[in-house]
Length: 478
Image 1 (cartoon, rainbow, N blue to C red):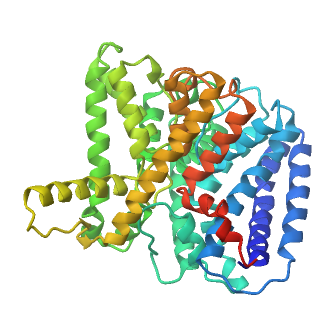
Image 2 (image 1 turned 180 degrees about the horizontal axis):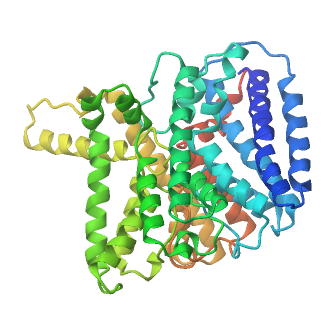
Image 3 (image 1 turned 90 degrees about the vertical axis):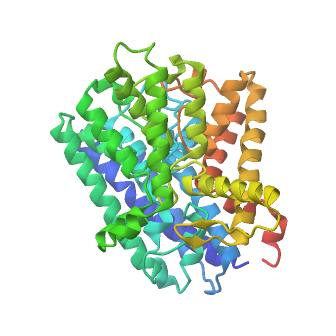
């Protein structure tokens, strides 16, 4: 284990975070707010980053170092990202600040704040900006400078990139990162422009564009997107939540004029089918809640996009919907967005592979001599990938129930404990009952908030990088 190089990488990313903190500092200065929380945070983060970056280290770097580096980087990012929250005086405890920071960077969107609009604009901007930084992945951004360290950056992005299969758009990982961030920035800017045209103030448009792009869900309004009560704004955000939920490789294929390959994506078709099906079902079952089919469709389509994309914005409190509708919401939390997107959850590609694997096993039982393989996008899926998929599913479910068990020590109902654990691991945001779209996570104990903060990072990194950190064999031969 090349721990010195791992810490050196942590230092480099912390320097990037210190630079990112200059953006909300500028916002605070523009609105004539106290800049001290950001100045102190920048000084501390930069000092730690410089100290770690100065460590002498050999360039020996392999898969183990990659997973350890990714796990530590995300934990450190969440911790130091909480500094502005700690210094601003609006968070009761350091754990509350850490929870909010982890929720931001992992694009979960859960909050401990019962009241949001009274916070300084600089702090609210930082909350949303953490979504944007974490949405595509802090290491995807960092790989542009990592080649200077003489390491193979694909070991890092492999550990951070969501989905059952890791792939690059072009041979060089640094070039892939630049392409991804160019598309990411362009879509974010386009959404901000559309929201501004729809009547949203520029500041609000930036906040909601950052949150949509990262599929996070932090808003600067207490009632989230519902505060605007605008059909146009609802439609724009719904469309962009879905756009950011699609694998960015599809956009790359479109840009390179490979339309057939893009439209032939099995995951894309499965994702759009789930969205359409869930929207129709919720529209029909919520007719008793709303006055017309059009109104029911408006709120159903928005919440389906918000949950399956794991953005978590709210225009309606689905806790008031029928129980069947709430179960659909829970299933969408499990499913999540597409692999290679900024969304969370298990990912549609995994769900599709599980269903195809199940179909194959049923065929084997009914036709013992039949030889059938599992394919995705016309390509054979290896047995090793299917095995890893089952291991991931087991680890995912185990993590959710273990976290729910600890959270239940607070005396919460099963619905609250389970949905809190699920929404954190899936990086969705809202849960059921008291932690629904109109609620918050302030009432949980420090232990539960700590567990949920860790669950957010575990879910964002898809479990294994964090499990590697807690495996004794990882730290042998330091």
